[in-house]
Image 1: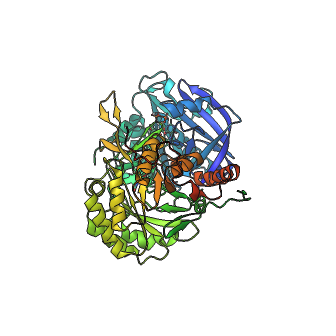
Image 2: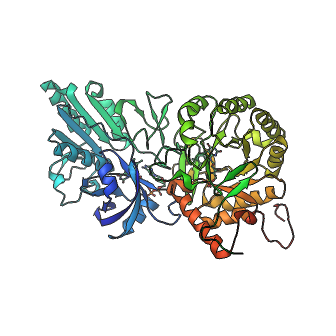
Length: 268
Length: 318
Ligand SMILES: Cc1cc2nc3c(=O)[nH]c(=O)nc-3n(C[C@H](O)[C@H](O)[C@H](O)COP(=O)(O)OP(=O)(O)OC[C@H]3O[C@@H](n4cnc5c(N)ncnc54)[C@H](O)[C@@H]3O)c2cc1C
Ligand SMILES: Cc1cc2nc3c(=O)[nH]c(=O)nc-3n(C[C@H](O)[C@H](O)[C@H](O)COP(=O)(O)O)c2cc1C
């Protein structure tokens, strides 16, 4: 069930330069959503921006959900002006969630930059269900971490930064590969599930460097320019193997797809 | 004139009567059920389905959409499930309720239009057909049918022989004289004309020098196209006798009233539905309020009521 809900903004703050976290009270959407789904946000009642903006559902605590975004244009900039107490109209929960693999022996989550929020939700879901899970985050530096400096998660997750800055220095695929190699030695690679979300560079690197075909499951969450959010306009097509056509829609077939099946734009 | 407590919004377009003049535009309301969770379909007088072709179409390469504030540029390429699946799986679910289901048909060749309509004749409850002869985003067929009035007339006449149901043709603004397409539709036996489809447009990234759509050009829709659409409706109002359905950039009740004043008997709402699927319910309520406040007894009295000092001029710039 999808809802159009006027969600009340509970808090809205800049957690890193240009990265914002907003908590909203949205009881219907919170009760219905699963990790990997997103909301389509009506940023303003006016005609600017014209379309809603898709944002992943981050943490869900009770009847409140978190959105975390980077300011990249008009809509994400206007969201920074929204004050607590104001309502924002949300359409959601939308899209297909991650496959919540409860029978895997281990779960490896890999986020790149602003790909982290849906994985935080998935991470907390697995933790609540007492299932073994590791969350890796790759960023260029501390300023790109989509978590506040006082966020307890900061010390729980594996952060790799290209600039180092006190974290493991390098690319996030390196510790992920090491973990998978250790799991292989254990004989549990085939019962491991991998979930990822991030820029195409990361998706590509995962496809090339990790033995994803040997895993129990490997999924990725994608982004695409979006119109309606519910499969009506057919605008958010991406190239994904294995369907009736070369294309699938991020909003309703996705955003979660099999890692092995997705192709970067323009490479059918 | 006495304003009633709940003004009647109904309009009549030849053999088609609608409980209100608000239709959802093709491509902006899916096959009809997608918004059911969040919006009451019955708030619409009717809806036009995504254009249906004979075989399924996969659509164009991504990216297919880009916002050009406050408008939208798309190159979907008529991606759709094809008539067979539509007739068997979807159509039976959309012909219920008081909102009329009108099926948009788009094909590559004339024979296919006839075939699709013939197949849909078996589905009970379909109120009519909109022949999409104006899509700017496909290589074959599409807009080409509309650009040649002789072809338009022949196509409509051939489909007319296959059905007694109500037919409208969807016209393109991308031609010198849209009224030629309207006249050809009327001559072919159409019950109404729908205009406008999207305007050919383009968006470029100045930095990368790349087009923002994979197809380079696309179809422009949304609020910025309203003045163009009003001019085209006014032009056609002065040319044909069959009812006109006005389309282009509608976002509120005033837009609806304006389209009716320049000649529309009903309207379609497209892009604005993406932002607010409940917009038709809001507009219907606002129209009732307007009728009460302005003492308008029937919406049909608005149609073509434009007051000009020079009489009915065809919409050619002076
Ligand atoms: C399913 C999904 C989940 C997302 N979750 C997050 C998230 O949790 N945090 C976050 O920071 N960003 C997320 N994004 C990306 C986010 O939607 C865009 O950054 C945002 O729409 C940009 O809007 P704007 O008005 O600021 O930018 P503008 O460039 O002004 O936007 C113009 C148009 O492009 C679209 N657009 C631009 N960039 C993107 C993009 N990367 N993906 C999709 N559409 C885009 C906008 O929606 C709009 O229609 C997500 C995208 C999708 C599809
Ligand atoms: C994403 C998108 C897809 C569309 N698909 C169709 C279609 O399949 N058939 C059709 O006749 N018109 C299609 N249209 C055109 C609309 O029906 C309408 O004519 C146009 O968008 C102008 O109205 P608007 O400004 O209210 O959107 C589409 C428009 C958009 C934005």
